Amino acid sequence: PETGFIRLPKVLALIPVSETTWWDGVREGRYPPPVKLSARCSAWPVASIRRLIEQLNAPITAAKAVVRHADRVGDRISMTVWSRIIRS
Image 1 (cartoon, one colour):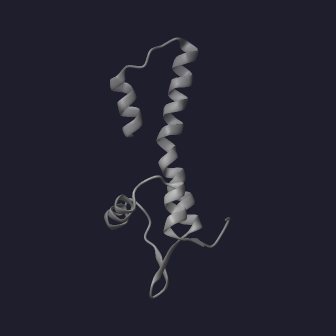
Image 2 (cartoon, one colour):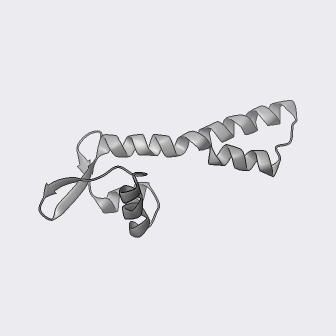
Image 3 (cartoon, helix red, strand yellow):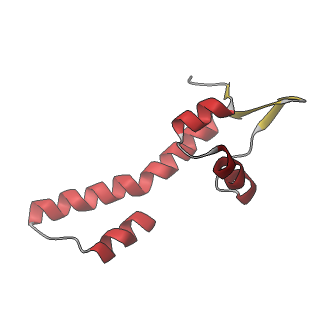
């Protein structure tokens, strides 16, 4: 959806981590916190999940750009450089 809230099963379908990893990430601040919709119902704002997906994809997008550039100029990318790109 464009707006509104999504529950955890849908979030985990979009961000492929285990439920335990997700909740650890929420506690550590890597993932956005849920909003309590009722006493037993938590959900995440769609906007916060979209931002998270953009953040998670940013290093991949940057790495792809570096690889495309290297391919154009005929350079090889060492595993050390590649690992730095992925971690940044």
